[in-house]
Figure (cartoon, rainbow, N blue to C red):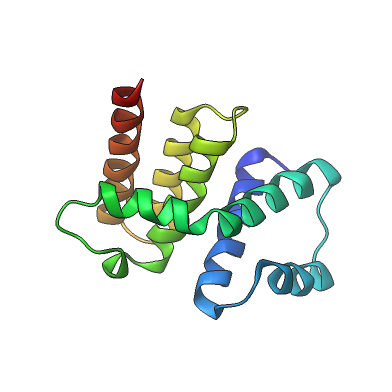
Length: 136
């Protein structure tokens, strides 16, 4: 399984958590009844999902600051899940280049939502990069 496939799995689990309003533990319990992951992939997927879940308030606060004329509640669940995943990677994972995280989020937004959603996700993540650089 490639990192892209692992990221796709993590995204789908984050989306499922958001839609079902369940805990990450519960979603993984159900997931592992039906699926298995290689150890390296499992470590990444669990780190990202549990990391987003543990840092959700902080990540959502970042998203809210970056939105121009939007409220967090107006963002589609797909875009929100992708933004959370990417921002977690960009903020907490040093092994993933920011450009890779952004490109993957944009690609998934195109595949699972629309070109407009992809532009929106790209804009928010690009704003985060600019904000982060301005803080240095």
